[in-house]
Image (cartoon, rainbow, N blue to C red; front, side, top):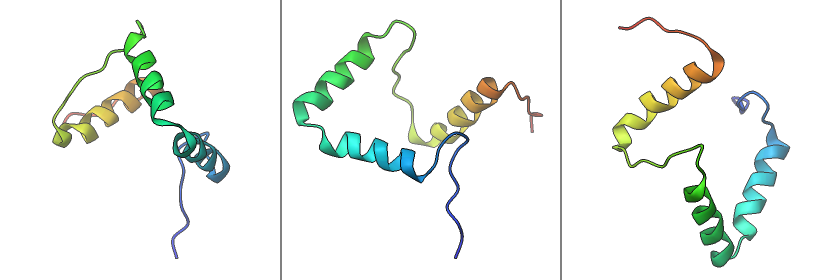
Length: 72
């Protein structure tokens, strides 16, 4: 059986903690959290086609880590 792998800084305990947070939220708490996220001035929310999500995720990770990749 393959061992689960977590992103850097994450482990099973952290994943369980995040799951517990969201699973125990009331609907009103979840809405308030979403609304607060939309009010942040240092971030933006965009709707993109699902097919682009892997490419966007890769771009964000590349920028975050400072790595560069060769274009295909």
